Length: 378
Ligand code: GN1
Ligand code: MG
Image (tube, rainbow, N blue to C red; front, side, top):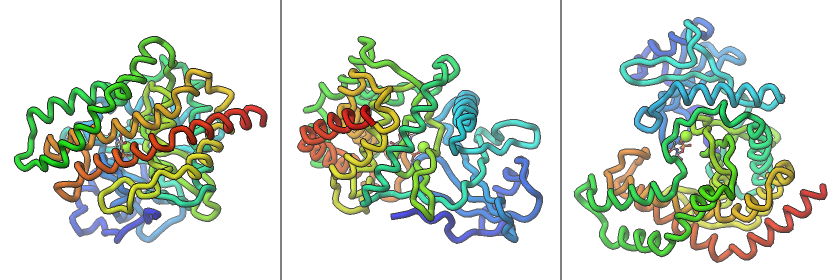
């Protein structure tokens, strides 16, 4: 399923988007009337497509209101955004292009909100789910290309701005607190008990990557930290992978987390949401993604990182289930939701996905082994 680039554009002269005009006017854009429309299905930010009216070639932009609850430090976030996009451009890789404000700032602050503008990348699509292995292969190349470039950035150039973003034990602790002190009155006792039991049975997994990191078994480097399928752009004509978007989570991180998050979303043919089809972890998509990724990155994936790749896949799936469930208990304060049960259902869907991953683990490890060997020889 693709997400259309525009949905019912509303004119800047009406339809409840008037407040956006003042914001858009802060950015160094061509003059003239603009139309706005909601863009994409991100769970965190408000995102709009801004188009020139009448349309003009190359005059489409993406306006985002950053979620200040999630991203408390926009200066550091935008610093990382600047460094990463600079490095990518230097290596002739496609990436997001920032539109500065008239006063040369990277974002505009208004009433405790932060707004940021980038150029819309034309002739591209994003997918919520895929079936074709060729797309999974392309997605693997996109993440591989990204890692290959950002690993050259000195870690000290990247500013830590995400608190414990992929520290799974931290999320587990938050879940325990939320369960004891929920923010909603009506709780589905049966389904939450099942979900909690599932998590409790996997406490070792929760701590596994953290332990490895503490023992310096896994080195950290600049990561995307949210390379899910819908954060990857594909060429609308050729379906070649273009680049990763949504760079707000760029921070120092662990390779197995990025690898895992991409696999979690790309290889689930059922999709992430309660309204989607049945969860289905697809080893053919896994094989294609892995091949695309390792074709570029195998020379940089040491034996330690290699041995934790599938752990990364499982842990990020469990972690997202923990985060959805926590948000359910807290009353849907973090993720955008469109129904009261969505967070709980989505938590259970990630658990179904993890169960399938566990059943496929032996085969997945075999694929990783053979892909490492063939790509190293290529
Ligand atoms: C959020 O912003 P978006 O929709 O790309 C979330 C990710 C989750 C993802 C699940 C900052 O990503 O961590 O994996 O939803 N981003 C943040 O769909 O929390
Ligand atoms: Mg995001």
